[in-house]
Length: 492
Image (cartoon, rainbow, N blue to C red; front, side, top):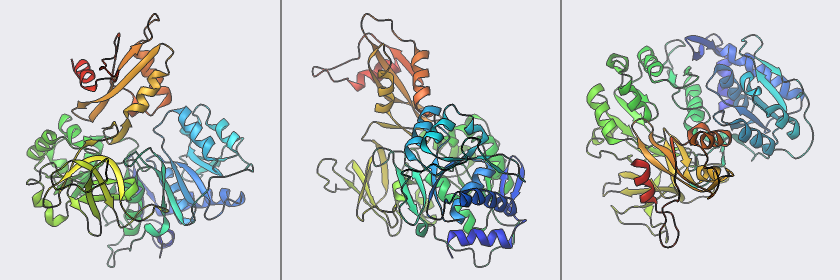
């Protein structure tokens, strides 16, 4: 049985069982099947067949969830498009991809330029209506697939997921159907009594995309939130009572700051935090207040998930190995190497982390995969992440390349140069902040102008928290910007 057949099994054998919870309402597997039938009918009539790539702007909503299930069930390749980006980059992405079809919410079809971008790409547009009985419609003006070169899919690919830059520039990673393996529980509890998977990360992420698949194999419904809210998440925890709590690391600070009642999290035996560094003081405060140990892990889209972490039998070591992201999982190798020579370093030395995972994206050659994360490993094999080697900061789980933000700022006609660094933040771990040097003799740009410029060209998490205009950037004798001085100025 593959994932498509497992979805068929749920459609046929448990049509009235819960599949998705959203805003206190339940959607059944019959609702998901109706979405599948409607989308599949449009695609089939356009001769968009098995093995073809289809774009999905994947929001955390029931119909978007159903669209993703459709691609898996019909063995088409889901090319995931993040909704968390400005209109212009999304339109450019869609036009360059030249997908046969794009599935998106009505809200996204109102984005400036998206319909025109699809027309130029010859892409059929499918809108998700939020109507259970009539869940989809064809977008007017995008009814016909226009010929030409199309997005090429590696045979057997189930989904392509955009990376966040752990091993280099962001790129789409192909995940094969054969990697989405699993087995339903041998003695599965009947519908309505199974645990609920609470989606706390975006579905377009590796954790979200694979989390859906894991829930399907177990026949579990998934609880979705349109936007992550710590109190709403905590109420879902209270309702469904999972033993293992999992959410972005920034949630720890949010729960404390919002004074979320302890009883809402009482079922939790452990809090699993991954996707970003965890501030040790915050995790200590969380553990002291809620009595739930924080367990860290480390992974990336390029590894198809986590490669290090704490096994259940190692949870007691989390305090002894305070701050560690655990050690390599079974059948996974991890090492620390010299950035220049690639030579493996001795224990305790800081270098670049490399991993050799048992599963990897389709087309990735065997062997070590190098990351841009600096790390060290102790004598017991436990790993600590010590920062980034490529100027990428992590803001609430999202990786922000500081050079990209600076490049946008330099495009302002009155800016001579700019530099962006990450400063500590109590909730988001780090936030980008910028120092900008205006062109002499011109009117210096305002902070508002520069912030709007970034907003127009990059996702919202790229937008600097603070921008300072200075007469000149601090430089050394070689005219290189002195980052330590930049930090002093911004912190001061």
